[in-house]
Image (tube, rainbow, N blue to C red):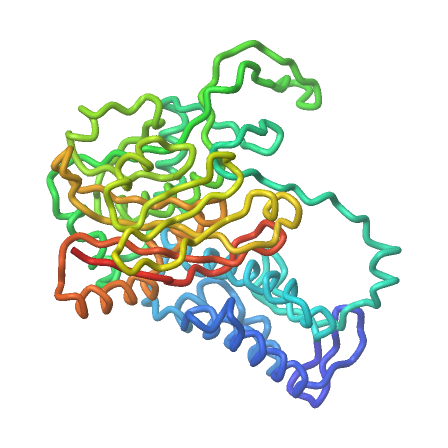
Amino acid sequence: MSLNHQDVKTEDQASVSVAAVREQLERLVGSTPFNHSRRFPTFLRFVVEHALNGTSDQLKERTIGIEVFGRGAEYDTASDPIVRVTAAEIRKRIAQYYAIPGHQDQLRLSLPSGSYVPQFHWPLPASHESSTDPQLPNEVLPLAGTRSPLLRFTLLLSGFALLGIGLAAGWFLHFPPSAKSDFFWEPVLRSGDSVLFCVADQNEYTNIVLRDATDPARQTVLKDNLTAVVFDDLNPVVKIAGILQSHGKQYSLRGESATTLSELRNGTTIVVGAFDNAWALRLTKPLRYHFDNDTGMTVFRIVDTAPAPHAPWTVDRLQQLNTNNYKDYALVARFTDPTTGKLTIVAAGIARGGTIAAGEFLTDPENLGQLEKAARRAGGKANMEFVLSTQIINGEPGMPTLEASYFW
């Protein structure tokens, strides 16, 4: 791209004015996927302005870490992947923005995978797109707890799985301690208790497909009894594990079907998943906000049991399957459970997107800053729960939004 001129070259060598690029940039950063965060708009403005000023060669990971995130001269990109993680989130939010009706005809601003140099292009006419781009089928992932092996990623709950999760958390999410994140996580971090992740599992897999080391295209199906974990539930596990590891806190992981009450009484429990995790349903049942469903298991909701209750936050299973575009909800809680006497953390969505949003909310300093302000207004009470919402577009969750909170 030629930059610092009135026009810039797009990916297909057409021209677009600098003014049009900046106008589109402001639309993006002012939209719902971006306007609740300072980090994402700052990052996007930084890389776009460098592109427009002809200094794209400076858009390196280390430079962005220092200039945008205030990292010091000793900044090590290998141990602190804040730039890569933020870029990945921005790519997701850009996709969500252009999936919103009315945005499809706007100038496209993209951040190609593996690069921090933005690109610009006008959308192709609909007829041209349909004739040149193969239409891939939309994978409709079920609500947590429904059984569809083809749409789930199988992870064995073994020592190797625990090691993999630990390495992923330490490698990808080793962020410096944050005062805002300490607000929510401080009771966990300062406690001498162990931390147990209790995650939803499925005992439905009887086969495992293995590949030949000499010829990976050759596969063999072997009989085995596997315990599977929903891939989307691992998203919050890895993110939260990153916070624990950055503070030197050890943890373990167990499937809900293998978790006993005695284990819950040994220390802090972080419960992930809702309608496929019996412990999540049991532990949240006495709370003001808790999970509920109709007898036909087609409508799933979070209900409010206050004298003047909020209307239920509902996901219609049929709408989810038919459109893959809907609003999902999640329950986030931190409380001392009266049965176990131990601290309990819950991060559970009604459907898959809600659980991802819960993990994002609980590991983002800006989101946790919202919780801290709400807690102070409520008098600094120790127990708290929150209802979150997230818009699902083509199966992908948007940013989490705080719907309701309660402290006691």
